[in-house]
Image: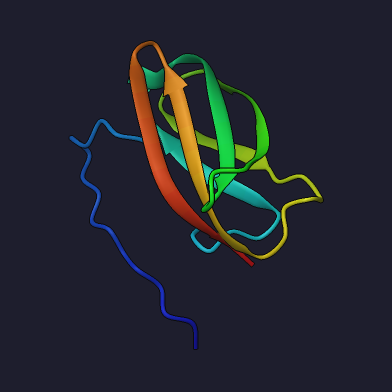
Length: 95
């Protein structure tokens, strides 16, 4: 079996977080209402090479998804999301 890390998330947590890590085909996120609007995202390899970038529309607190480009192979990547002076960074394993 794969080893999966878990994080406890409470309702008072106002930070974005990844729902599926490892990811397959897309990265599923939970975005709090404070991220409402258009967010810029960047997916980079661990050596800093930009692999994918785009925009993400957050309409309110809830789940959002980033579809991974075909050029993203299995491995570890760094996901950065920025919006309205807020930023989020997480390592994501792609399978």
